[in-house]
Length: 70
Image 1 (cartoon, helix red, strand yellow):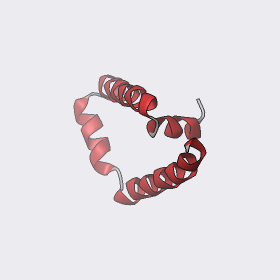
Image 2 (cartoon, helix red, strand yellow):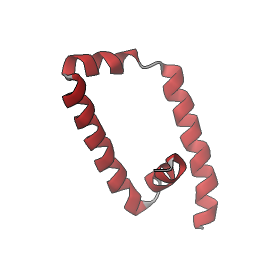
Image 3 (cartoon, helix red, strand yellow):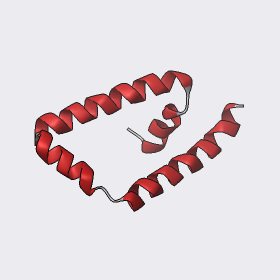
Image 4 (cartoon, one colour):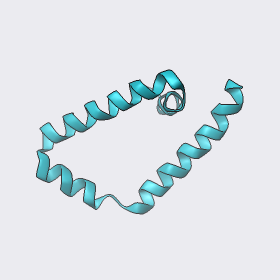
């Protein structure tokens, strides 16, 4: 699945529900695969810079996709 398409779906009304369900499914898979303790440790080790970069990238994607929809 194309990542840019996935992020486009995030910002469309119909895609939001699907992406939330996908996120929940992914979290469940990670927790069952790694176990809760390991998963929480992994989450706590995620660097804020990585999260900020991802956030900025999603904003850029949104700015690109919204004009196409209007």
